[in-house]
Structure formats: structure tokens, C-alpha cells
Length: 287
Image (cartoon, rainbow, N blue to C red; front, top):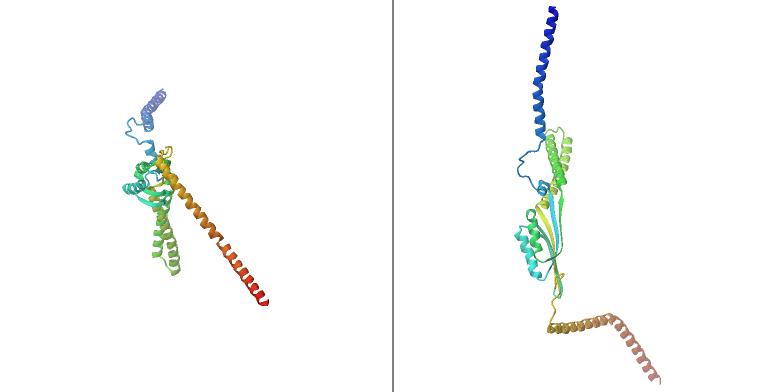
């Protein structure tokens, strides 16, 4: 009987310990579940967030470029305006070409490099110099290529340091010569990649804007002003003189083209005349 009571008492104590342990684990599990849910829950006050475009462009390496075709009635003013704007934007002209003049309408092509931060501002100011016929903008993302190049440069610099360390510990002349050759090749690759990285930096820091400027007597979509009688009379008179000049030029060109044949014909005529004169004299003497 005593053994049975002791067994029941032991079972009761064991059951109590089990219940106490379960009660202690329940709150811990609840706390753990709350922390997990909180870590994935969105924050109520996230503060200001960047705009979608800014988020996309942040940390990216973008190369901006644009092309403009403009018409202008005041070619000289527009040309000087392009040059002044480039200086005002803190940029420079990579290329400039002007052609035409006199009776021929003038035309200019400019390749301007302006700070990328002022790309939009520069584009609007260039467009205001004339009537826009054509306009296009472009942004090329070279982020991956840029950082791949940067990682390659870092690896090459590490390789250079290892080769220098090995050269200090070289035991033979042959080993030293081999290491120097490898070091020369690594340094050549470093110089090449560094130059490419500088080119990338230049493209990213300075946007490229190509401007084509055309001189016109009337802007596209606008009718030319009607000329008065005096102006039309003068145009007719000068046009007639222009026709006379073109006719004289045609005659001169025709004479120039026929000159070799005339020289040959004159030679044959002189030869025939000489033969005839000689024959006449011979016959007179014979008589």
C-alpha cells in the first residue's frame, strides 16, 4: 500500500513538472511569433521616399545624349548663341562645322559636351535658338560594364602587388626575368583599363548634344511674305541677267570643248593650202 501511494505521488510530481514546463514555453513561443511578424510588417512611418525615377537613376552610370535640328532666319545670331550657351553651361565644343554662304543658304553642325547635371537645361536653351524640326534624347546605362571594369582593375592591381612581392623573393635570374615580363603585361592591361575607365567617366560626367542649324528664308509651316512689285521687278531683272551669264558660260564651255578640234582642222587646212600652193607654182614653172 505504501509503495502504491509513493508511486502515485511520483506520478503526480512528474505531471506537475510537465505542466509547469509547458506553461513556461507557451509565452516564449508567443513572443517569438510576434517578433517574426513585426520584422516583415511594413513600417508605419517610413519617412520620405525617393521618387521612382530617382530610385532607378541612383547609383547608375548613365550616358546622356541628344540630337537637335533647328531652322533659323537669323543664322549668325543662332550660331553665336550656340557657342555662348556652351560656354555658359560650363561645357566645350567637341566639333563645329559651318558651310555655305553668299547665294547659298548656310548650314552648321555642332557637337557640344555639357555637364550631365545641366543636360535638360542645356537642351531647352538650345531648342530656343530656332524652330525645332527634329529632336531626340537618349540615356544609355553602362553601369554593369563600368563596375565590371572596376572589378577587373582591382584584380589586376592585386596581381601586380603579388608579382612585386615574388620579385623581391626571386632566387634566380630566370625567375626574375619571367616575373618582370608578367609584371609588364599586367601593367599594360592596367593602363588600358584605366584609360577606358576615364573614357567612361567622361561620358557619364558630360552629356553630348549634337545641333544641326539650317538657315532658311521662311520657317517650316509659315508662308513666305508676298513681295511687292518693285521687288518682283528687281528679281526678274537680276534673274534675266543670271540667265545671260549662264548662257555665256555655256558658250565659253562649248568653245573650250571644241578648241582641240579647231586646232586640228586648222592644221589640216594649212597643210592642204601649202600643197595646193606648191602644185600651182610647179605647174607655172612647167609651162
